[in-house]
Amino acid sequence: MGMRRLTFFLVIVVLVLLTAACGVKKRGVPTVEPCGVSTDTDVALSQAEQDRLAAERDALRAKEMAERDAMSAKQREMMQAQYRQAMGAFTTMIYYAFDSADLSSEAQRILREKADFLKKYPDTRIVIEGHCDERGSNEYNLALGERRAESAKKFLVDLGVASSRMSTISYGEEKPAAMGHGEDAWSLNRRSEFAVE
Amino acid sequence: MRLFRFLVPVFLVLAVLCPDARAERVYIQIQDPFLRTIPLALPGFAAGADPRAAEAAREGRGILEEVLAVPRFFQILPEETYITDLAQGASARDLDFKDWTAIGAELLITGSVDVEGDILALELRLFDTYTQRLLAGKRYKAHRTDLRRIILRFASEVVQALTGTPGVFDTRIAFVSTATGNKEIFVSDFDGHNPVAVTHDSVIALSPAWSADGRFMAWSSYKERGPNIHVLDTRTRQGTVIKYTGLNVTPAWSPKGFVLAACLSKDGNPEIYSLTGTGKVINRLTDNWGIDVSPSWFPDGKKIAFVSNRSGGPQIYELELATGEVRRLTFSGKDINAPAVSPNGEYIAYQGIEDRDFDIFVMRSDGSKPVRLTSGAGNNESPSWSPDGTLIAFSSTREGPSRIYVMTARGTQQRRLLIQAGEQSEPAWSPNLPDF
Image 1 (tube, each protein chain N blue to C red):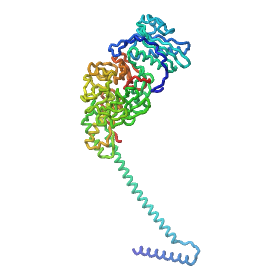
Image 2 (image 1 turned 120 degrees about the vertical axis):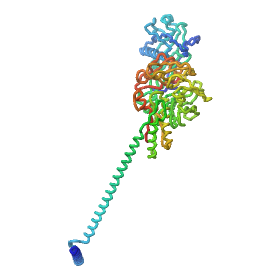
Image 3 (image 1 turned 90 degrees about the vertical axis):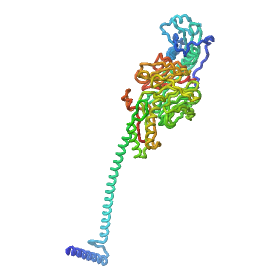
Image 4 (image 1 turned 120 degrees about the horizontal axis):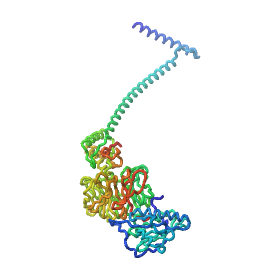
């Protein structure tokens, strides 16, 4: 303790002496003479210190910001991934029996999931595309495809999705999902597709 | 090559060569279900000294032989059976009709061709070899490039003289083709010549339809999302789009006026409406929970035939427009579609399944006596009547890809209309086109 106090005292004394010497010289001799420590140098040091501190603060802030950004990017990514997954699930098609627009229980289950998605993401607007297999006339199938898309839409409306968020379009038999001329292909082509606009 | 030529007096019919006034009888009853073919001799045309006359004579006769095969009335006798060569003369006084009756020819067509500069002069005559009467005779002058049109004009004269109706030589057939990659609307001559694209939209175009006067066409298309109905005035090239929410499909022009029947789903369900040609709704014609689609007008404009699934699968119904009364017409077969009322209103052609594939059927328009016209030849769909009611165009997959074929209204003489890349479907036969 005594040592520290003594050291402190000595430093003060030296500083006072040095200051007095410089002062004397300045007052006595107007010419510039190199001086060990000038008051100018004192100010410069303190400026550097401030700059350093400011830089440290800035760096810290930037680091925090970056961390926060990284967090939110990760979060965003997660949310996006969630949305993508939901979207992926959302585009699950529903299938129909021959010459029918009735919704099977499986189709109804899928539509309930779609309704959940649409409630979770209230800004999304969707298009429901109705499709048919190649049997029947092109013309009749346009009407049948429209009925398929409409029946899916009505079901979603009944589950509380605003009808203004959904549009329908029928492609009849014009855009088959599966090529081929048998029930395997036909059953895949009798469908409604869902897309987010 | 222009798609729609009009008001171009490209050639002159200089004279009617005195057809026999007594030739009033109808040689061919086109409504006759047991129509027989008439043996016809078509000797080489006489030609003037100019070598181009000989070439035009050869070419002109060839075109006439080809187009006369289309109406299926004629059995053109092979040239090697002919006793005389008519290269020297073509009028009645030069003819010994016994030379023609001897080989069984009941009809004889003679022609002579001359060339002056770029102008062709043709004389063409149709004779009844037994009565030795001139039934049709025409002298034409036209530019060399109009040879086909002259021959078609004369072919119309021949059929007019024999049947009392103008035939199909001044008609066209619209159809859907993927020749350029997507489903576009095309139009060809009645015999498949000169196919020309009407749409170049690279989307899906379907269901072409002609107005009763041939001036307007309508079809449905996904060009502006759609499907919407596009109406084209072939005279002004102006287009209109009928674009209600939902479906706008299966346009059918009324036989009376600028009116369409079409299927719209703007009120939530596919129903048939009548519309002006500019798309204003006149009336909702059907009101049923099921699908109502594919209207076809009766020629009096008082009834339409259409497709509905109101009793299960698709079947054909008729609707009395004045009363709204609906009657089911088809009961046998399944997946009955694409009704086409014949030009005289007595028959309805349609597609349906009796065995496994789609086939074309014709029934009386009251639904009685359905007769199957195609069988064992792939899927056969979308029948469309020629305006004289003697022929039916349809699509078939008998050769693999879907193509357009033409047969008689009794199902005989089924022949491919044309060869094109891609697939062709949904033929629509035009009315007689005065400006053809």
